[in-house]
Length: 358
Image (cartoon, rainbow, N blue to C red):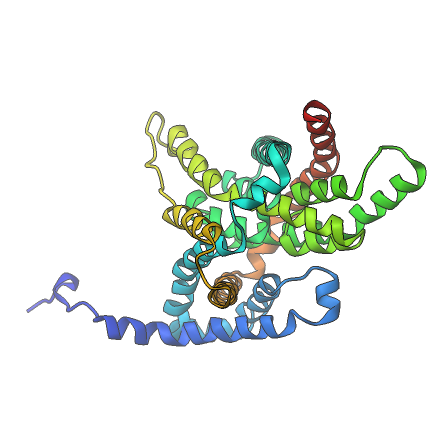
C-alpha cells in the first residue's frame, strides 16, 4: 500500500524546534563572536558594527565549514534569516522616538525625505537602465544607500524578494561606501572651513551627515570626527531617516504590486504587507511615551542587536562566493554613483531646504 506524503504525520512543535536548534546555535555563535569583536578600538574607529562583522564571519564559514553542516543546521539558519530578522526590525524601533522629529524640525524631516526618495529613485532607474542590474539588486542597493544601510537592506528583502547573494552584495556596498564616507565627510568639512567655500556650522554639517551617510555607526564616526555637537545633530537626523523605513516599505510594496509581476503582462502582484514595519512604528511610538523602564529598553536593544546579528550571520552562511563573483563590478558602480549623489546632491538638498525655510 502506497503512503502519500500528505498522509505522513506533521512534525510537532517540539520536533520543529529540535530541528532548528543546531542552526540557531550556529548563528548564535557567529553573532556572539561578532558582538565580542565589535568593541575593539580599531573596529569602532572605522564604524564597523557587529552586524557587519556577523555577515563577514558568516560568509567565511558559509564558504568553508557550513556546506558540511547545512543538512543539520539549515532549518535553524533559515529561521534566523526569516523570523529573527523580522523580530529584530520590530525591536529596532526602540532606538528612536517621535520626539527626535521635533529636534530636527520640519526642515530636517523634509531633507531626509528628499534625500531618501531621490536616492532610491536614482538607484532604481540607473541600476536597471544604465547598469543592467536585476531589479531586485538595484532596489536593495537603493534601500541600503537611501535609508539606514544593512538594516534597510534586510528589511526590504521580504518586500523585494531578493536572493541571498543579492542581499549580501547590497550590504557589501553599504560597508564600502559608508566606510569611505567616514573619512571623506570630515576631510571635506575641514577643507571647507579652511577655504570658506560654503558657510557651514557644525550643526549644519551634522544634518548633512545624518541625512546622507549609510549606517548609524558610520554617522556617529563621521560626526565625532568634527565635534560632539555635530555628532549629536547627525544622530538625530539619522534617526528621523530611520523612522522613514516603515512608510518606505509599505509604499514600495504597493508600488511593486501596481507594476505587476514580471512575465505576466497586465497581472498585478499581491501587496506584500510588511507587518514588521507596523511593529517597528508601534515600538517607536511606545518608546516615545517613555513608559518603559530604562533598564528594560536597554536590555531589549541588546536583544535586538543579537537578533539582527544572528540574521546577518544566517545571510552570510547561505551566501556563496561564486554568487558574489558573478555579481561583478556593476553593483559597486551603482553604489559609487549613489555615493556621489548623496555627497553632492545631498549637499544641494540640504542647502536648498535651509535657504527656503531659513
